[in-house]
Image (cartoon, rainbow, N blue to C red; front, top):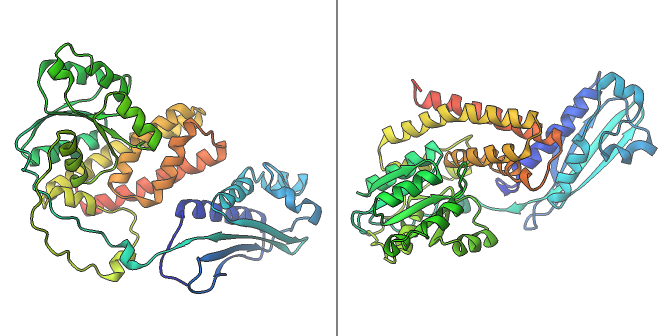
Length: 400
């Protein structure tokens, strides 16, 4: 077995949970067995086979293939006794096929069933997982600046404000588009940092209105879009809407500095690079529930900064998750997607890899509707993982 492979851990986990939950539900006595083996040879693209075997009632041969259709059961009596399997098997096969794999089923009446799927992965090694250290930037090289930040997420506000002030810059913060326009009309700014998705007036609309300011000098102020949607088509739309540039969330301190320097038309100074510390191989292979390493880089040794970010996460996440649960219960995909988008930057800031794919899948349900059962599984996963993260943060920072 290779030590590390690249794939989609969320989808693999969801497939296995669906298959295992069905197997346990239909197995009154005996056992449920999960196995995994590598089918490919060393040097080839990794190909793995997963199998879930049970000793349940089994499925008639003529009904076996239909088990992958939504809401299909082997018999009415089975459905009455155990409840429906819902969309679990249908979703599982769909996810397997999305990842380029195949799923099959074998069964014998009164002996049990085996569901098997194969998935291709990408290979990696420990060195690829180690962080690349860029040359250190001189964050004071652009001189003192005044910045308008339009951002409604409290964690993002704190992060950006802290970074800018650490550079020796002053910052005014607006929670909404109208607030940003009001501040923009009162003060002169060197640059505006504009979140795209804000409640009410979005960042695109606010920037268009900003560009209509009667003061030509003020209207020409550089505006940098802060967005989680910097796809090619979206990026072009931002530039056409009057933005001077864009930056994808989550971003590193050096990314923000470079982006601002670019829209200001300046080149930031670089400090002499120092050799990066050796990273133990074991550390590169560790996949913790969350990581504060990125926040600590931003903090430059200020542990109170890290504690404050952790505190904000613990304070703001539970109501955000409750909102997602309510929207999911009411079948409101538009609001659910908006709530997922708001929470995404907080999850990414703590590098919660287990929720990287799920939160984006929920965010995309605005345009690509998901089955109710999958939405429920996704929201439940978000709740469970964020609760574990908050427990970990409370241990890291007693008194939160």
